[in-house]
Length: 258
Image 1 (cartoon, one colour):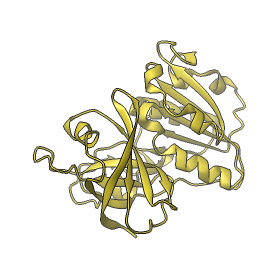
Image 2 (tube, rainbow, N blue to C red):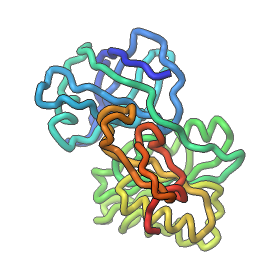
Image 3 (cartoon, rainbow, N blue to C red):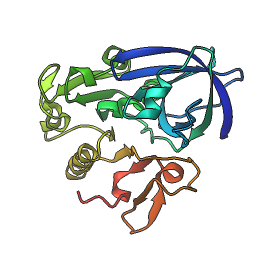
Image 4 (spheres, one colour):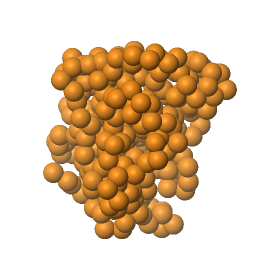
């Protein structure tokens, strides 16, 4: 059930100079939140930022009623959210969006580029709960773009790639050695990150005949399909709103030239 609710800032965990986790505490019990769900956050006290900002829900602590949201600073709104005072109220619309499909058994492959790792901690927890083995490929331009590797390693084997070679294997994540195995024994591939990366993953999945789901990173200003900021085209030529039909899509249903 969708809610419009005020949370309070419980704290921050800064991951580098422009990426952080914001912990938001609720006075009410939290509803069930599925991997892939997102929240629309209103930036308080900033008249220059009047649209809500969409963020994947990174983690949930039901006992302490805390949501963790991963945020990378890319503009005034994301910068403002990183400078709120502890206890300051923040309005959320949540939980929004659909969820990832979970196969009956693994193994599965999760490929994330940069901040595309945001929806995949909850997915890793759900996979582990279902005894589905997972492998993570996390990529970034530099080591500064790789986050929470030790945390993700609790839920699967983790490999890293950086374009400059400062961490893990040098190169883009879609060129990693794991993907050069022609058998690729994965029953599902999940991906989130820049569109060119996700399209490369979708192409690989099609070539290997492996189902693939992508979480699209579109601007979603309302979360209800009213503003039409997040329209994407389907393989059938229809235009759908990512916020209401996604953000998770089976890539075979997208009008991607793969």
